Amino acid sequence: MGLTLGVEEEFLLVDPRSGIPCPAAPGVLADLPAADWVGQAELFPTQLETATGVCTDLADLAAQIQDARQAVRAAAAGHGVVPMASGVPVFAGPLLERPAGERFAAIHDRFSAVVEDYQACGCHVHVGVADPDLAVAVINHINPWVPTLAALAVNSPVRDGRDRGHASLRQLDQARFPGCGLPPWFESAADHAEQVARLVDCGVILDDRMTFWLVRRSPHLPTIEVRAADTVLEPWEAVLQAALVRGLVRTALGELELGREGVRLDPQLAAASVWAAARYGVGPAIDPVAGVATTAEARVKALLDWTRPALESAGDWEFVAAAVGRLLACGPGASRQRAALGRGELVAAVTGVGLPVSDPLIG
Image (tube, rainbow, N blue to C red; front, top):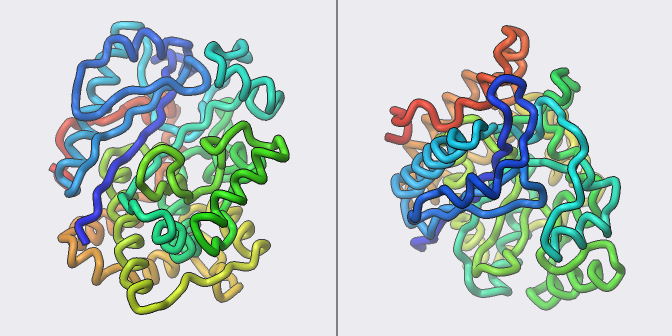
C-alpha cells in the first residue's frame, strides 16, 4: 500500500519586532518562486498557506516543507515581515476589514463575529485514498486517534502576549464554528455527502469545502485530510504528523481488509477528548473508546503500538520513533512557546520558521 502524502501549512505574516500580524500576503505570494509546492491565499491577507506536491516518501515531503518555509521567509523579508509558526497570533493587531473576493466575503458575512478576528493556523495532512466509500470507512477508524495527533502538535497557548492556559487556542477558535471537532460515524460515502449537504442546507456552513471536522474526505482531492495539528514550530514536527497519519490510514486499510469496522464514538466523549488535547497537550487525556481518563503519553504509546507494523512496512518507523522521543523530551510547541515567553523571547521563538535549514532528524 504505497500511499501518497501531502502537507499544507498556514502561517501568519507579522512585524518582526512587535509580532503583530500584517496584511502582506498578496505581495509575499506574488514573490514566491515556482516550485513543487505552491503558496495560497487565506481568509485574511495576514495569512498564507503553503501546500506540498504529492509525495511518496518522507524525505521528499521534508524537503518540500523545508523549501517552502525558506522561500516564504525570503519573500516575506522583501515586504518587511516574517512568517510566524503559531496556531494563533501571539499579539493582536486591529480588527481586519471585510476580506476581498466573493467567497471569503461571503464567509465573513455568514459567520460575523466568529471570523472577525479568526486568524487560526493549522497543519493539514493529506493521504491518498481515492475510493470514496473506503475513505469514509478509514475515517471511522482514524477518529479515536485524532485527539492524540492534536496533543502532539499543540502550539498556541499565548494570545495578546499572555499565556491563556490552553495549549491550543486554535482548537477553541475552531470550536466556534458549526461542524467542528471529530466527525460522526459514517455508513458510506453517500452518508458523508448527505451529512455535509444537510449542514449546507441548514445554512450553518457555506458549502462542502467548509466543514470544520478534524478529519474528513477532502472536498477537492482524492484524499483523507487530517486537520488536528496547529501549525508547528519546526519542519520535523509537520513530517511527524504526516507519518503518523499515513500509518493510521495504512493500519485502517488493513483492518478493513479483515472486515473490521471502526468504532462508533460517544459524541460527548469524542468532544471531551478533543477538549482535553487542546487544554493540556501532552498531559491529562481521555481515551474516547474506553471512556476513561488517561495521559497523552499513554495514548501516544498506544498509537505507536497500533501503527508500528504499518510504519515499519513503509520505512517510516525509525524516523517516527526518534521524532516522538524528541518531542516528548522537549515538549510540544506550546511548552516551547511558554518557555520563550518566560525568557522574553516569544516573537523570536515563533518566527524562526524553518531554521536551521538542515535538521539532523529529517536531513
